[in-house]
Length: 328
Image (cartoon, rainbow, N blue to C red; front, top):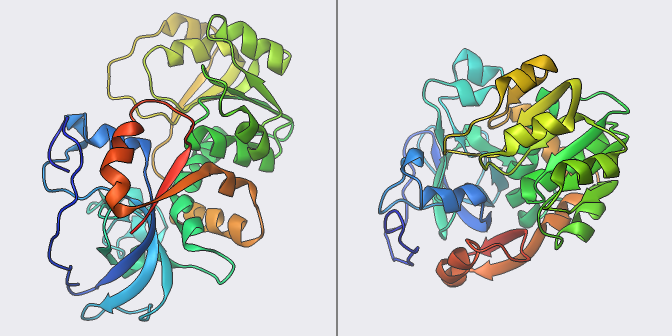
């Protein structure tokens, strides 16, 4: 990136060299994430000129650093983009996001990227590099569903029909939800939402609370906020039942306000969900390996690396794309 509020640029840089415990991956596919867009706009993400974005990637191991074990040249891997030491108690428990050395792995918008062996998951023969690039958003959604404590037969409302919201719909149905309604202000993802497992849709910006209630037949047991815009927590409070659950998955760096009395009077549980565990990342790959076809509906286009700056800017304006992959 060239800096905040500036478009991306293609630059030629030296090929990376792996250090001790590191390896180099030839990137095969990398997804463009909504948070990549935010990173070029919001200083809260800590990105600066010269940083290479891209944290949803998979590829081939092409170089091994000293003392790097567990993988071989030619292995196809998905890169779990949560940097960690790999040896502390939280890492060994698979809770890598809470390691003292935690950081977000970038570098996937390139031909080659350096990572560590403990972040790589070998792809089975049944999984493509494109599959490897969508594991991360699937794992993020699975973590949110697990945090919700979803019960069989629950009525679920998903706010936002982006990749995370659609992945939540997939997991919620897979985990036994009886009704899964996806709500959005635009209609273009309706077919994809139904293909991912939604049982209903709520598209009525003039009456979002009423539209969801009509689609669900009442209030939701669990509401997943997957957009990250001010005002949606307050809306979710109106849409959830008494003693229901709201899970925040949308990344919102702007201040938000809501009526805490309305939440308290209903004894609503408000849960925040960030990142995922290693076992959840592996479970997302297992679902693809077992033949789940729905998550592949997330992919709407694959582009060359030199097309990235123009397409990246186009994604700032909401269109018909869901998940665009880069094929360096």
